Image (cartoon, rainbow, N blue to C red; front, side):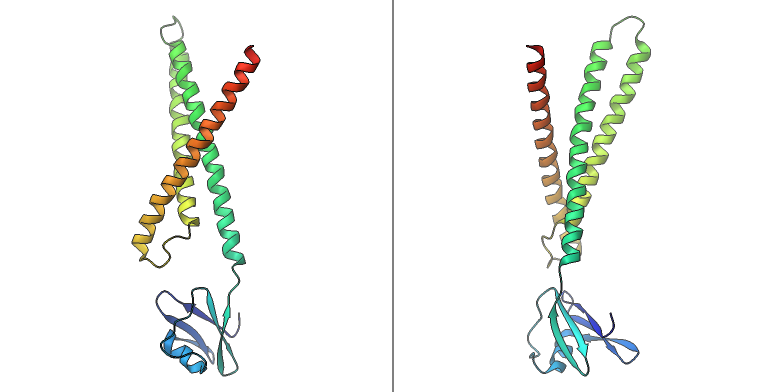
Length: 187
């Protein structure tokens, strides 16, 4: 975008186009060039500085891309939680199959195959849960003012709690529906 200045409100620097090159100025100095803002004031996060003519002007940025980004990551996280819950239910189902096949003569190959499937469903469950945690951590807007390592750790802890809770909720609801449908079919 020609004539736009990039603002880093966390570190307090503004990148301003000057002629054909870009210069990095402290935010307070660049804003004082505008004449409207005193040196002691700081712009709010999400403020964009635009150079028009010889004056700097502050404009609020559109959060449209950020909102779309968060919705996309949130949707992916929910879908991965659903996949994790169903993978866990199928993992449990393979455990039941193994329990039924153990001790039956001539079914050793079926037991070995069921044990492999049991392991694969568990790995799929853990992979989907990990993906859900990572996408949730990327979508969370919490602790924006903290340092990067602290923000990352806090977001991953919150994402782990949210993703695990959502996966357990989906799993319990699915299991309840399956049991209710099974009882209505049996009667």
